[in-house]
Length: 219
Image 1 (cartoon, rainbow, N blue to C red):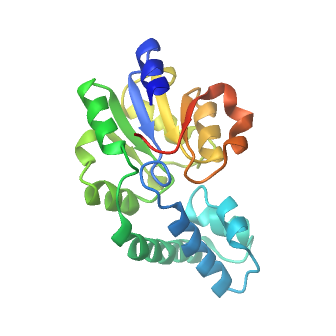
Image 2 (image 1 turned 30 degrees about the horizontal axis):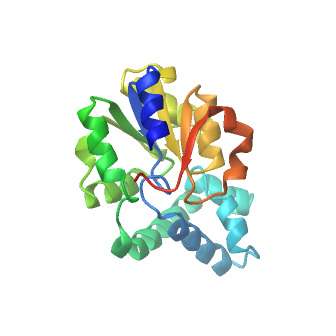
C-alpha cells in the first residue's frame, strides 16, 4: 500500500472510486457459481472458467452474450433477479470486506478524500454489502447498474462517479479487479489500482501504463 499512498500524496488525487465485487468484497466466485448454475440448468454447455470470463456488465448483457437472441429483455431481467437471489443467499454467511479495506477507508476519510462506488451491480447488491459491512458513511456517491445506460468498459460508470463527487476525472484513482473494469477507468482517463482477487496480473498488460499498483488486499 506504500506505493498507493505515495501516488495519492504526489499526484492531484481528490477522490477514490471503488468497484464493488472482487474489489471491496471477495465475492466473484459466488457470482460466477450463481451464473454457472443458471446457465447449466438451461442446458448451456459452458464451463465455470468460461462463465467467469462473461461476468461483467449488466445482468441482461451477461445473458445475451452467453445465450444471444434467446430471451426478451423482461425475461433476462427476471433471470438476473433470480441469479442475484442465489448470490446473496450463498454469500451472506461469508459477507465481509477484503482484509485491510476497513482501515484504508477510515484513513482515506481522515485525509478528506472523497469516495464513491461505481459498480455494474444492481443497487440491492450494493446496499447488501455496504449496509452489511456498515461502511455506507464513507461514501459520497453510489453508481449502480441502474444508474447508467452503457456498462463497463464504457466510461460512463466512473465518469458519473466523478460528476457526483464534483471532481475532475484525472483527479480520481480507481480500484478495480477485472480487465474490463480497468479498461473502463482508462477510458475515463483515470489511473487504477488492481486487486488480484479474480484475475491474473498478465491479463491487465494492455493497461499497465495506467496501473499504479497490483495488490491482493489492502493491508
